Image (cartoon, rainbow, N blue to C red; front, side, top):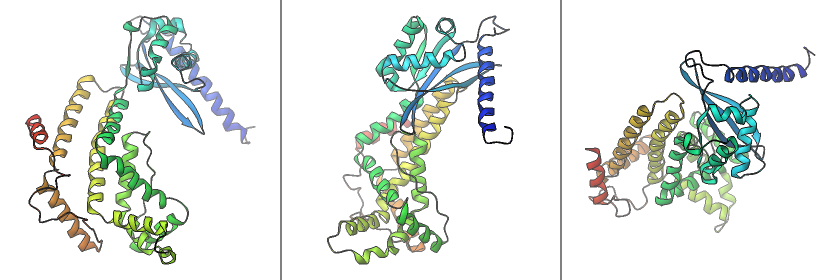
Length: 361
């Protein structure tokens, strides 16, 4: 068997058996400093792979003076209810001998996404373990709450909501098949590296959305050349929908306002990503996270200040100069660079701007 394909599969299972046994033994061993069994915080989240939703279950526990996250199991979610999710957590922890009786003494808290809290899975978990809900700290984790703020932003800022559709439509057209071949050829002509076009998914964290916009900006010149080289345009009739779509993508690809907004969102998402990653580190101390949140809000206020028209106009001018120098024809639609006042639709309210300045001072 050592020379067959079955060896590594069985070896993997044996490794898991040994690791799970050692984890279980750790939870049954008293801490020499306190004389008590290890205290754990339960963590759980759902993930969908191959059309089936699984529930990732783990714990955070102190190991040699440091908090460590330990993955326990991934169980299929068969009932998307508070009781079903809570039972899955108990079943997974039972595999390392953290039974209901032991959890009653060793569980001090936990963290989940909003669905667990809204459904009441935290309360059901306490009922199954027979522990008073007020005795444990089961909370909505910071990373998921931060990501929900982006959803709120899309509801309040129309152009941000439309940006994913605009960029996503262009990327999807060039991500597979004939479109991708045309894009590769364009990158070769320009002697540029082609970054893999990434598709937008609103259920993923900020770093995933940022990667979509990052690769879009890096591939922008290749996108424009690919659209210009597309010989299919000569076969389109005047009213062909495909032709209209192609022309719209060409105009969007060279529109400084669209590109500027993508770059602006990319800058904001960088700050969101850094705060999100920090909040996911198990050893981040509360005051460290509070300090990071204050810095994040200050940076967001500074970015909001950039909407003053003088700086916005300077940005557009810089884009235009770069485009002329690189032979990339940026267009500006109805924007007038010699305007002394900002367009009404783009101007921040004076009162809101003064509030932001006061908050930063």
